[in-house]
Figure 1 (cartoon, rainbow, N blue to C red):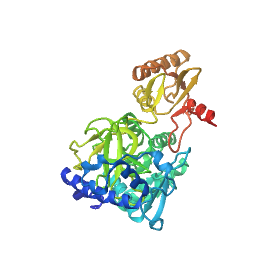
Figure 2 (spheres, rainbow, N blue to C red):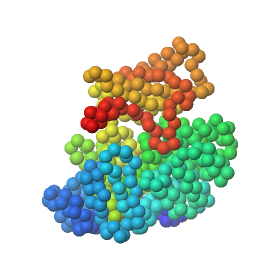
Figure 3 (tube, one colour):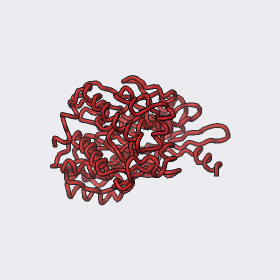
Figure 4 (tube, helix red, strand yellow):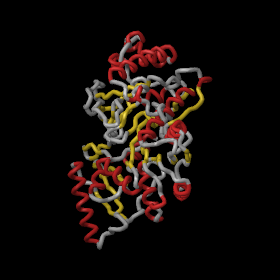
Length: 439
């Protein structure tokens, strides 16, 4: 246990954290300059030499890299060690363009497992727990990451992967799963299934570790109530390592970044200017221990806030907020910036569950946005007038949140397609038309 809540590292004074980061950053920059032609060229173009990087404050001298750079260098262009030293790859789940492929040495995997183990311990996990992992396995990082972390903690690990909900529930009840690891949308789905089967009294879950998609505080409370657990957030990117880059503790007020392995920055997404602590902007990460696929100043496109406010758990590593949206997948509808999480907040505040789907379209020169929302099984509309009245209220509340009119359709339970992976919240037909026009 001491290895995975390590006071020497996780409660280190901030000055010592920054000193450690500076030392590791300097070594990492030397490593990538020597071994990765892409970085060497980028640094030469920026007029930066490895010896210029001595402390964390020198990080801003280095150029950014972006996802397009990773795709352009596919598959081996960012490899930092001989291929013979690599023991695994993981890949993004994207379906268009070149995939991002991340490489790992055995040491990289061990460090990743340790980061995920810290997340499990922060959620109350011990070697007495049964960790039920229904993130996807294979190329997706969710399953392998939490699987490895659970092994490090010494928990009994159920490598369930995603799908086959009946089997999930059977193993959950028969083996007494205590910690659930999956996407929040699937956790909500499991809560529905447990309620329908009337087996909540057979569920022994105490905590859940949920990530891989955006979710709100309202959705957290909904999941906690339906499953009878405490729900913890976890953050990661395939490009950086996978889940475990940061994680929530019992305070549930932001995710602690594993600062002995990653340096976070917040920048103005338009200018690249580094913003002070507490300012909202785009999250940038630098890997300071990963050797096979080391990313320096990688622009995640996630919008969030960093804080060093003292945490009741005793950890001193900086905390990041839940992503507040993205700088690249934000929808612009009728000239207004729209994040799907804003829609979800309104629906949950109005007493609906997070079963909805947005459809954005373009008719002529104008955009349209519509939302299908399921009514609760226990509270169906009394008649057509009641249904129209409820839809009218949702339209008003969404307009208050977004500043635009969203056409709302209340639909029967189970009308919105369920997901056993990442929920498909938005169908943007404008994008489909644009792709079609390019073909």
